[in-house]
Length: 567
Image 1: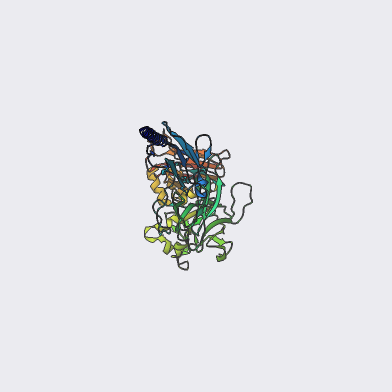
Image 2 (image 1 turned 135 degrees about the vertical axis):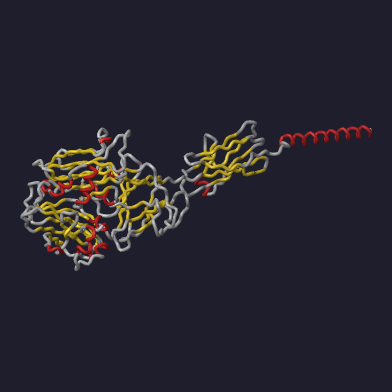
């Protein structure tokens, strides 16, 4: 009996051990003896123009993926399983990849680069598997310079360059302008130095300028996502001898003194030419006709003759206007030297008023005394610094003329020959020829030159052109030289008053067929456009010349324009 009990006891114990052993193995199988396998850690950006980044992983255990829910992260990111969005997702172990997408809630900005870390939990372990950032938006800014296109009496049509200007990387206060600095221009129809740019940008900007420069106008360009902006300079003692400064186009959303990078600041160097010696007038280069009795008439027949001509000149204080009479031998009479009496009177309409600024426009009244004989005078207008070297109380001929060279005007004063007065001169008084005032910018910046030739010049041109300009000179016919120093000046328009006809001649027969010099007129015949046009097969050589002879309504020679291609 005792043995049976022990047997059953042994059987029961063995069965219990078997049961216990079986339970432990099953438990281990249920929980799995594997180690969770996490994907390799990555750092990636959601690039500008995109809004999401996909993370793929193959979980070997039940899993939960999540991102932080703090306000900063939640403002920028959320997760998506392709159907719904949440800050965490869970799932079962899988032999195929699971894809969860990190979604950017807001679009990229210029100066913030937010990020979030993605965590994965499996088998009671949590690891960060990714850091996803939202790449900031790239600022785009381009500045284009303008050149002059079609010109009218009232304004300029601006044509923009196709290549943007390089940004300036130098000092905020440059002492001198670098070679590639933008130089302000002064168009004939405008009242100050200025420049027009085209601005293309994908952010709202503000322009910071030096104290002497202001943003005068900002206008949308039709058909383009861009603006035309015009900057104008102020005339002051600070700029009278020129100045250099920096324009900074910066993002209006940032502090002016802070530079977060990413093109938040775009700086360009700009220079203003000196204006101490500026002399501007629509009458530069004209011929002013008076009759024998001293009356001026514009030749239109629409106005009554008057005993004065009004010459408007814009300048700084201290200019001098000096009339000179050709002596017939290439030289001049200026004052009462050689028993010669002045016959031209020049009177300013108002005295200079310092309160009106450094640069002012004044009208100078020109009058001539009656004369039975035809005569001509040339006006010399000397700017401030040049005039300051002249003692107006001493004989001017001794200061301005070269006694050793037949009393010709000294070389240093020749650039200041301004206009011509003709009294009772046959032929030339019947028409007037002068460059259209809108083209004055080309003469100011050296792209072209308009000058009245003296007798020495005539003889030089005679030898080259084979024309009897010396005889023209003796008969009072003015001869002008129009020199093109740059292709920019092609197509200069000449204003012509009075009825006329013209005849062209070419110097080099080599170019006769090519007709590199051409003239076109408007319907009213009050304006002629002179062009140095040429074919692509045959380009005129530098120094090529031709001339245009103008005749008045009576068929008499009235003026000659010698055209020189100097580029």
